[in-house]
Length: 337
Ligand code: SF4
Image 1 (cartoon, rainbow, N blue to C red):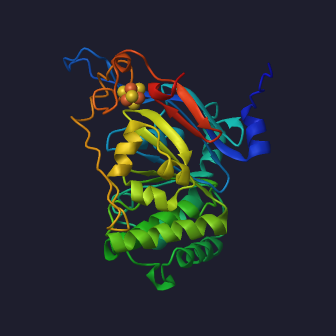
Image 2 (cartoon, rainbow, N blue to C red):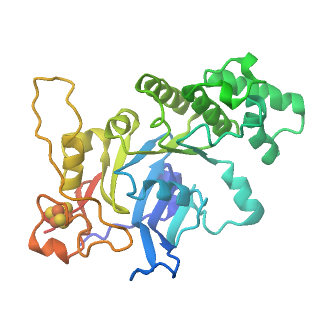
């Protein structure tokens, strides 16, 4: 028997260009003991593993409350994980502290869902975009910083004469451009985009998605893209992970996931996407019931309470990942042999 050697994170970075590797990540929030519930924690993220390559857009998709935003924040250590491993460029990100952590954070930025609340209303656009340069001490000279800010404003589609204006003077799409410029000004290698277009009108959404695509090519950046909207995710992603109740239930390249979905939850999500051709009829798969509480998740397969294909053993046997092919894996008992 040939035993396949597993590469370590540094080998995966150097040989396969894996910029971020997340292994068995868990984030459980303790509940205030005054709340009279049996369980003591909200299991928001459970055993989540994935990787992102250089210049790749990797997306997490799932219904609201499935743990995708918590995963994004935990990866950046805006909240600390309960357990698991995170490697950036082959080195453990969780072992960094103090100066080292601050330095590396420059390479990992975030764009938020609501561009208005994430921008300080008392600061001008110029000050907002310049702030990360000051925090990371990137340019000592004020004029150099101003030039850099003006260059970045142009790059994201803002005008130079808007430098002295305030966030409330801009539309939602323009505010998202400001948020993007603020993230990009420090030349990051990975940006976590948390529902970056869901607060915008549909016509503006495509402008921001195209901008993200162009910036990815021009600046060689990778994205961890988080969205509940499977159509948006299809447009922008190279690979997609589908999340349900804090678990990744299926991972595949975008075309593979849409052409050959395996997990019953993925099949239900995709069945709700309208066809471009109205003559093509598709049966919508209705899921029964609501998403169970992450305080008291179901035993066995977390999806068994809503799954149209559930069997008796799904109530107690927890699925492990099955490889459909080299890049496509699914956690469902139907595919275990
Ligand atoms: Fe459905 Fe069972 Fe597969 Fe879970 S393991 S998705 S309940 S068939």
